[in-house]
Image (cartoon, rainbow, N blue to C red; front, side):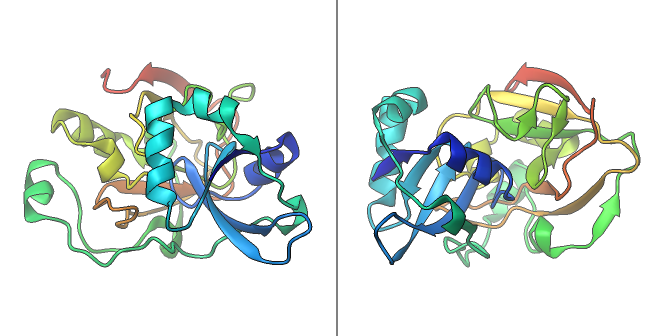
Length: 233
């Protein structure tokens, strides 16, 4: 099924790291139930059961539109204190990135995801881009103009490669919702900010191969400097 989260649960989700850019895979217990269930949560506010009907429900969200699906869905009656991020990706797929996409779309094969790689300091000059289906992307703190803790981006170079090769960002960044990417948030971290780089691993039927950057502590204030429609260079 498809659910909307209570504000208290959204706040809890915002305090937890993403599983990938724009989504989290969580587990938790419903009230009056001992069984642990898993969900894929989009933008910290729309949850989908991670079960045999996941693909069907994902299609329903695309057909209805995110806002309509959110408005029509029942609230997820989950115990807030029980919410945890699922370690690893249960949707991880051992499949090879096609040579065609590696060549034509400048994707990358092999390597590890960002969280599995060492931490490094940014140089204060490099720009990163967060692509999103949502203009109100909740991992962006618009008041402080920063990326919040536990959030993903890609690099400006990889974003440009995605655009200029006419690649599919949903497949490149292995996004579970399959909604069209509409927005790009440009972030230039300060020198003291820390990140981990990696390659997007295949998931949700997508090949991945884009570059991802994970900011465990987010970025400093005033590092978000631009918001554009996706694809506008």
